[in-house]
Amino acid sequence: MVVAASVVVAVGSATGMMSALGDGRGSDEARPPEVTRSPGLETLPLVPSPSPPATKSPSPTPSPTPKKKAKPRPSPTRAERKQQQTVVSARLYRHPDSQVLDWVRENAGDPRHAVIESRIAAQPAAVWFADFTPDTITARVRAVTSGGAALGRVPVVVPYAVPDRDCGGPSQGGAPDLDAYDAWIDRFAAGLGSGDVIVVLEPDSIAQSECLSARERADRFASLARAGRAFKAANPRARVYYDAGHSGWHAPGQQAEWLRQAGAASTASSDGVFSNVSNFHTTADEIAYDRQVLAALGGPASLGAVIDTSRNGAGAPADGQWCDPAGRKLGRAPTLSTGEARIDAYLWVKLPGESDGCKGEPGTFTASYAYDLAR
Image (tube, rainbow, N blue to C red; front, side):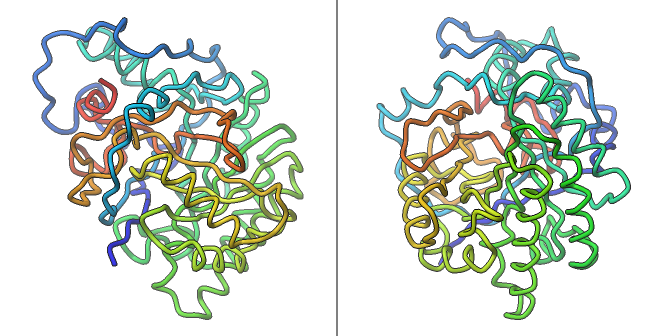
């Protein structure tokens, strides 16, 4: 069975992301396409104006890159494509410190600037915390959540430090053991504040757990359940979502059983599940899959799902390619108003343009890739 994970290759620490880009921050990591002019914006769907300026906070860790082949899915219909660029919810928070915003500030004369700025940089995206830094994690999380609270907007944060992350693959890392992880989670929770916040808890931690022994898996799931309880105890308005993989991976029943063991069926720790992080499966496929997972999971009807729509506008590539595949497009804009039962939000968890490692260094913003996704 071909499966696909959605994992982040960490590039430096959360406070050192910008230095990780090196001296070429304003250029492509890979050779850019020949571009002679910027396409007319009048042909592009309208997007909202950027969030008001906010105080700059410590840089988040770059967002994820998938590592295994994705199961191909049919291309979206014309009706689906028309719906993909919906008006973004004014309540989602766009963090003012990101690689795409740096590129926009530093490359005003680039012919791709207008497209990347309006189609990607204007959209709110998740902030990742992918390095194990116990001494600074509370302040860094607080900088994001307080920034959102000051504007009355909802930030999306991604804790990504579980031990044995990525089963020793390209995104290996995380805390040294579960005791250290539990302590890191407590410090993360202390930064959540008291306002609305969405927590996308540990992409791949459940769907990609087959490499663990039964005991190791049970211990990891216990820590994940504990993490959800810690977040909710620290901030009752935090909404916590657990890893459901995506529609091209595990069967809904199997995924639901693991989710149940990890605490995803209990409102003491969970608000539901997330899917398609850093992947390409269509929104329609993910809606159907997430509803099947939730039905198998059980629990109260209040449990819902959030879907990463950042790069799924053309569906999964037919050849199963996962690394910066050609022909992909931006998906539906981030929103908290999906109009779909039990689907709580469409989010951009993976920031479009951050490379999987083929068009640029893993986790770094690559303008040529961003432009191809956005045009």
